[in-house]
Length: 155
Image (cartoon, rainbow, N blue to C red; front, side):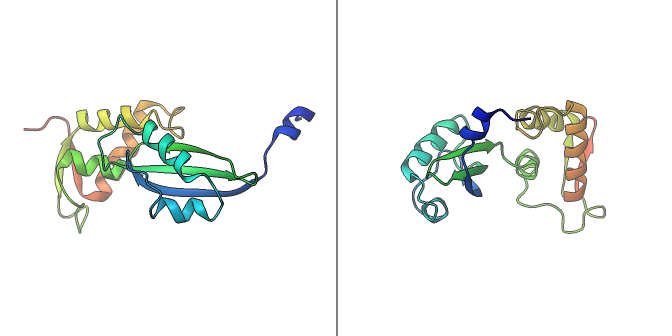
């Protein structure tokens, strides 16, 4: 049961916006500007805050951001680390996965690469309660669907 104070402080949400923005590269230009502008949100405040939060990542790293816009023109946002497929492609040194996964191998990665990606993904809000082993299994499944073979040790 909610208390009266919680009910009164809850702000009505006008929209939830999902964007993929390069790390440290949020600018009022598209795609950020039009997406936030239609809800009358402060573009410069978002850009400064997002760029400050993502400065530890290399520039041009695609970051998934979920912005919750409230009816009083304020907002909150959460930044997720880059997608698993992006990390797998970077680790394997390929532009895209296999066109025929399961038949043609695009590249090979060691279990150590998978473990390192899992440690980074564990900091995501959606993965913080998952065990490292289950995150690794999920990443291995993604690698298999991309045609990336996972081996114990690279030769």
